[in-house]
Length: 258
Image 1: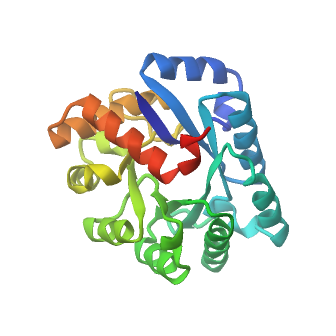
Image 2: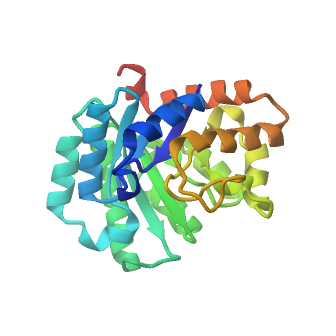
């Protein structure tokens, strides 16, 4: 069985059919889902969904797009919500220098604040990185993120960055782009990352994998991501599923007890 280590079941795209989406995921042999917050409201919704569905777990935090909205009160609410045993990590946080929806200095301030919160509550962090590879690694090092570790979600960096992140205790997560025919870098990473440091995700409703591009993405489609990576590595889907499931449980420690 597979785990979708990063999706947004809390997105408005899923309001009308969450049950059916989770049922379809089980039919695709995806038995657990990690629902990730991207602002305060969606983080609280992720935690609520984790209470509603036995196979859903929550990650709470504010995406770099909304870094400009982060206040001290935001961290207080996140800290309180993190006490829920169904919350497995802090995020997604990080830097996005592609869209630039928030100023770079506020993104960096929010990123540092999330790492400090993660260290305070003893949870790993889920990192968003787009066009900010060097800055992300620098901040992770400066804020001692290795104390908690975490996941670089939808990894888009090079092999050198992957190695640096793994040295700090981070796992490398790959999503739908690894299935695209022109995705040379994600496919290279898929073949090089040690099996014990690899995760699979959908980032649903975004980044739908081949052969379903053009449709809304959903957690069950992580199977296509896993199949492609297994093919690239020359191993069976069962072997990949077993390893990535163990990896998710290792980094998101609370999943082992809930």
